Length: 203
Image (cartoon, rainbow, N blue to C red; front, side):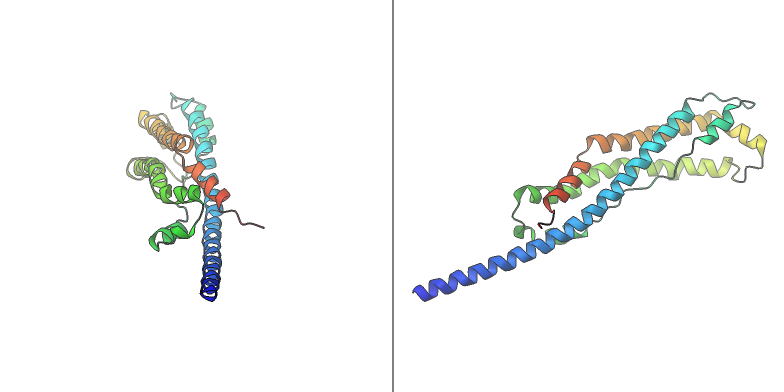
């Protein structure tokens, strides 16, 4: 009887050790992904803040007349192409889809992992609205009305003094404000930081 109990104890210890090794591998994969996710999120965040500042500066110049010196100032405020946030989520999906979540002992971490997809989708709603506006309204207007070579000065004056251009800039700013509001009020950044913290490798 004692021998059987000892053997069971050894087997339990071996199983626990294997589970902890498997857990650590999962955590390392998640940690690696979310360190990169944070870098990408910080980049997206910085671009949106810079673009909002540039758009505010442009809008402050309105209304612009055809012969106005404001046109040069308007052009000087550069606005970067927006980028969407597309984080690595394969490590989390693998954990959840393979029923490996039970290997993770930290209940707080499990909560963040399970809710990550919903939190991400809530944030991405604002990005989707922004890029829908850009692709369906803003860029078609730009392609039709702007002189990309900058050789037709009369066209440039017409476009920058147009109320439609003004409205496009205001709409673009409002959409970026929606993204920034999501950055500041949705829990996505907190989730990223907490997942990194809770999966931190132990030295």
